[in-house]
Image (cartoon, rainbow, N blue to C red; front, side, top):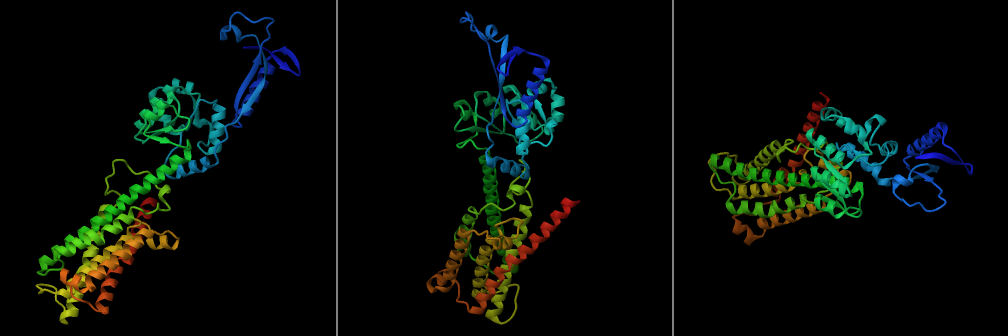
Length: 443
């Protein structure tokens, strides 16, 4: 296009040396993450008859290069690092020059070596088999066409990966629609892109995507915590009634179970839904999409915790029998209101204290509290449940309605001690589970 160059105020013929200097300066600016534009001119004595590019863009005089920078938002680099810690692989797809793309990606930590970047032309030259072999080692695509974006998304999906694609232009719509999660830009995005997207960023900020991932993990975690708590509690009730029936006595009656389900379990389960994200939530690997709700040992946790609450409830009943009759009995027990009252108090309070355990499936809830992580709604729910349970036992007309008998300080303290013991017991089991998981990883 250029046959001459404007140097030191003079127009001189274009030479190989000048071309080499221009190319070197272009690369130097691109390596600084600048978008580089070249300027050229051509003088006419009179306006030309043909203004088409073919007629105008030849025999030009090169004037110079100008570099522009679109500064990276300060929060993006930290978001990229958080992505990698969470097992998410960021991939950069851009229309910029390869050198510019590599410079930006290096600054952000997307790639560590320039060989991890290719151009759209190089991608077009690859066969599907070759690209499938290399796709997991390519993190930057430069000078791409719309069809390349769709090919990249489909290649990752063929590897069994969950893909999220961002974009703002009309030409991004096919790849956004092909991805598992299409993300459109709310400010700069076109209507077409927003319509095909599953999620729209109102601030056009990459860091918002990372925040959304963290929030999604928190919500899923809290759903599992509530399910674990409710299933464990209901399993304990079933096992306690079943065991008592086999041994020939009544440990709890239908109104007692209804009270526990509607009052004792309800409020802590709702409060668990408000639990904050655990400190390591963005350092975990993504879960397998095929995993069920009981994956990750949740089924085993429900089972052993249900059995544990059952054992503590039965122990409270037998201790109540001992307080009432003065001797131990374990089978064919006549109606024992004191034992039933202690069993009810122990099961209610055990489930209340156990909701505290549910703040983390594997983490130590004691350490969480010492680090300043608290769930105030859960504490409020625990206090409210304790107050209501105590009222049912101690207020005469309520106690008569439920068939309870007043209990003394010793019985009340014994029930609370049994119920509270579920916290240290579960903490010990969690510590063993964490140690076993570390050994498994090390192996």
